[in-house]
Image 1 (cartoon, helix red, strand yellow):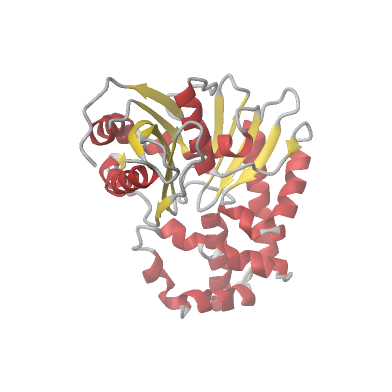
Image 2 (tube, helix red, strand yellow; image 1 turned 90 degrees about the vertical axis):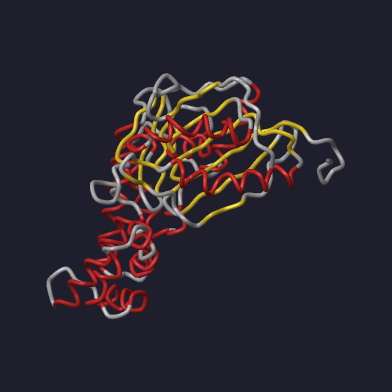
Amino acid sequence: MSDEGGGPRDAGFLAVDSGGSGLRAVVGAPGREPSAPLASREPVRTAARGIDPGHLLEQLLPMARALADSYGLGQVTTAVVGAAGLASLGDALRAELPGALARELGVRTVALAADAVTAYVGALGPRPGAVVAAGTGAIAIGTDLARWRRADGWGHLLGDCGSGAWIGRAGLEAALRAFDGRDGGSAALRAGAEDMFGPLPGLPEQLYPRADRPAVLASFAPRVAECAGAGDPAAVAIVGAAARHLAESAAAVCPAEGEPLVALTGGLVRLGDPLLLPLAGELARLLPQARQVPAEGDPLHGAVRVASDLAAGRVTLPGDEKLFSVVHMKPVQKKGY
């Protein structure tokens, strides 16, 4: 079978970004542009053993096969999976995913990375610095290329300070304060919450039973930023506090020597100036030695970059048991597509 350009089927890689809002995957091969991504909007479940390998594979394998077929890959030999929660909840994934990808797709080399690592590589490449990956959740990761350091990323109940879920929860609290008549409320945020969720007394029953509660909370963050841009005092305070939290996480992981780079990546970038302007000020205050730069790409771009480097045998990233590991396997006869 030939690809669209008329060339023969060849071997290539699979790159995956599994985050709080769903899963995306592409395939690629040396000398060719990667495919367009396929996506699932269903976040991979966590269970008693942490991230559920079966649920990830249930979504990923059909995507991988469809991508490989349309792209013209004869075999996927390398796979890079960037996964949210890998550092804290990834034991089952590390134990089961490489073997499953070998059996199902014939993969020989698997890199498992925290999504913060793929976010870092997508944003800065293999250069010293710090990246704050902030979307539904938030984590900062830094490296001097000898080791990784991380801060936060503890989930919406224990941390993820400054994240979309954090901003959304704080905004909804201000809305409920206004509903109750307590200090610290915001009429603008109350109106926004009622527009999105309906009468506020029904909000707890809408929110608490949801498995995707962090994503639901994060869905309100753009309204908070919009109100902050319009000058609402409660919203301005919330977004300013988020900027401080994100900058503090960056400062905790950024190398102290040289002129490291620092970047923000993730969905919170789309909140625009209400967040980005105070964040730039906080980063300048806490990290005067660092140079702020725009992210070159997102976590999926980072997974592609790691996969390309792995396939070429030139990965220079530091290994870490929890954050970034590479598994090489003996060839296994893959199941047919």
